[in-house]
Amino acid sequence: MSVNRPNAGSASEETAAPPPVPGTGDTTPAPDQEDHGRGILKSIATGSSLVAILAVVLSIILGGLLIALTDEDVAAASTYFFSRPGDTLLAAWEAASGAYAALFQGAVFNPGADSLGLMFRPLTETLTVATPLILAGLGVAVAFRAGLFNIGAQGQIILGAMFAGWIGFSWHLPFGLHLLFVVLAGFVGGALWGVIPGLLKARTGAHEVIVTIMLNYIAIYLVGFLLTTPSFQNPGSSNPISPRLDDTAVFPQILGPQFRLHLGFLVAIAATYGVWWLLNRSTVGFELRAVGANPFAARTAGISVTKGYVVVMMLAGGLAGLAGVAQVAGTERVLTSGIAASFGFDAITVALLGRSHPWGVFFAGVLFGAFRAGGVQMQTLTGTPIDIVLVVQSLIVLFIAAPPLVKAIFRIDQKKTAKARKGSKNQLVSGGAA
Image (cartoon, rainbow, N blue to C red; front, side):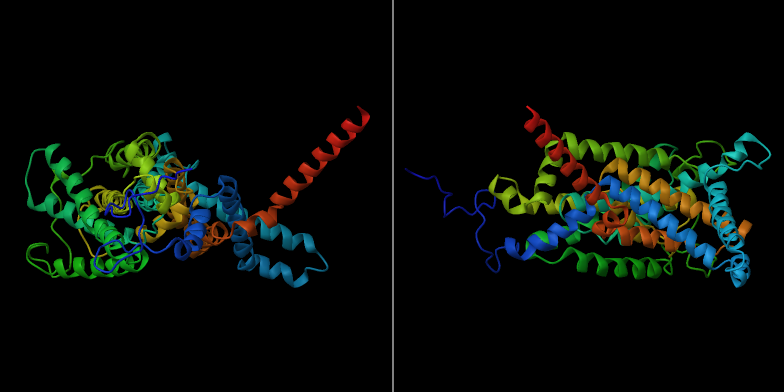
């Protein structure tokens, strides 16, 4: 019997996977070096949606307990807990429920507002804050699907905002055309910052986590430096801030000037659909998912892993760059050194919570936008520190990164095992009766 073997003399990575040779550009580690780490990343980033939902529920419960433990009324009632335990439990419930009710009131619906529009204004604030989270989260999620851990969304947001901001205040074009160039410039800026770790990963084997973290610092100090130069600094100001973007270069408000929700939210929806279509309906998306599933098998099947790494990081950076556009042309309308805030790092959590699925990332971004928008109202009405929102977000990351812990707490595997045993027992009984 003859066995067809790949041509040993072929230099194409699509037909063979030879050992890495210094200087050839193909330095992909051997399977046994990456399988373990890749498997962990894959299980965390693309695990069960049920685990993600339960992680959010568990985090909210623990956050409520922390609110109760730090409440003054609960502390006072706990001094006589053994004589009247109901008072302590009632005070704890009122503290936690009151804080979360205020959070809901500041993030979704305010029944005490004077008009119907103002009642739903908190929801528009949530969607406004969620816009850059969704776009940056999509950038992180796309890289996850290709097996890469993109920690550089923060720097990519900054570069996108830099490119978009410069076009916005230095060019003077008609409405529509100007905004189009601003959006394209933001995408290109983020894509250029994202393609660097992609190329280094593909050609030299450099770890994308290290490279993207370093690029974050470069971007932070780069924008700080540029804002002190005549090309970027606002004339007549000593503060590191750019001139205001032209009115033709900013996203118009969807619901009017009394609401901050702008056209960038529709861009986020379009980007979510586009990423979903790309990953699930296109040949490029299939190749990227194949590279993420097993780059060595993908190479054997004729898929260019090198090209996949470059393309996916360029796309991821471009999506994060759009988040920078949403910031500089949507809410801020000027370029500052803090234009990215912490959106780039929060985007990692959003992508994990969304399980790297585009629509999952979309709803996770809305949830985190609600946390951010409602946290201020919660602190104002109840005195609960806004840091509790960060605690809840951190707990979500913790539980998502430890699926067995969530399953053990809710006894998911035990219930499945018990149900399977019961089904097998019923089959044996019915078989014996027959």
